[in-house]
Length: 263
View 1 (spheres, rainbow, N blue to C red):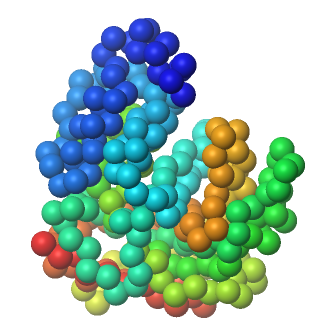
View 2: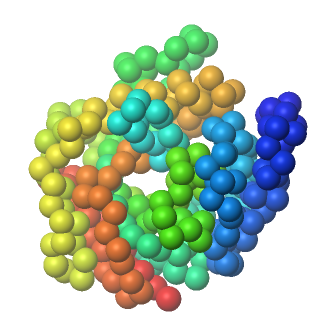
């Protein structure tokens, strides 16, 4: 990665991967959100964004307990690590001073019993299925660390760990293979009121997302590990929340997950 970082710093004088990561680290630790020129964010390459991710992980110094992954409409796969201190079990109290929040999403996540793939260069769907211990409902708390009033460009979001604030996971459903994730009903409830419902997702082949992620990480010299949780995108979109809100996410035939947003 150092070989790439030197080349890109030389070709884009506005970019400094370590300085940018340190600013985002400050915001992740509860400091001020990061101001950056629009052209700086817009000119970030994917290699630069991934370098910033790597520098953030080094700065945090904690284990990677999960990943978030999404396949965008144009076929671009985006992903970001989720560190251990930001993964919670259901009924957790999530503090805004450290994690921040702009909104929450209703997601389905998978926990791995083992690292998928052996020595083969391509990790197959069957290998991924065999590695999954179970599926669960999840609440993702999202908060961009950029202080922009508009949606940050794609690679700026990748650099910012895809705006992950926290991930709260519910009880594990080990008999998950019979579920049709494209048609499973989802409900987002806030303060005991149903806010949004969804009858499923058109892009509901969630295992395919995990397969793509596993192979993308392998191409970058990384891998999914046993015990990690992979969250696969929102069923109900991003919904704004405030301090004191009680969040519940429910999927048919999967145990619900809850969280409370504390000051």
